[in-house]
Image 1: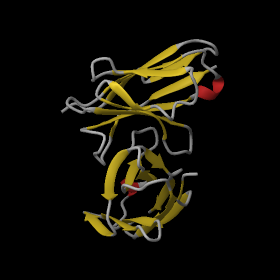
Image 2 (image 1 turned 45 degrees about the vertical axis):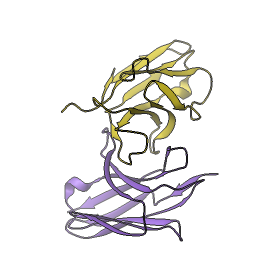
Image 3 (image 1 turned 180 degrees about the vertical axis):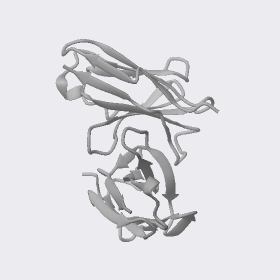
Length: 109
Length: 114
């Protein structure tokens, strides 16, 4: 079957750095995406990795290792507004996005 | 420019009734996706359109669910004989084409079946 595993909840302090891991098992792989979703809101795109390595976009970075079927999202200089759920999603061979269950990020002052 | 819009934002219906959920994608986006999201879960793929045709409807849970996109823009998700288990947030997303990695989501329709 197809599955993505990510921690259900992560807690961090404002100003700190946090890493959210994602491991996947899917039929076909065309890239790993990360989305942010605030409570009651729509998912919004953060980053995408098709090749191994690190992609950096401002305070957010995302990493992929295809040989390990593993990726992570790194959030730096955490702000209270970063409190949200973060989803990893894999684009499979049918162009479908297969989603993880999400990681709730709790930020404490 | 305008983002993806969905109507209604909330829909409460009785078990056994028929409902229609509407999605208006970003202008010019040829790919349109429907997802269902339950509390504490990630979005679950239902169906996607490339233009007017359903390119992949493998995620539709059963034949009570049907979606159309007759003119390649607005899409309607139709659910017949609703069941309490259909209660969820139904999300619509669009992208320039099916190969694009970034999908733009609408605010969703919260469906409650009583």
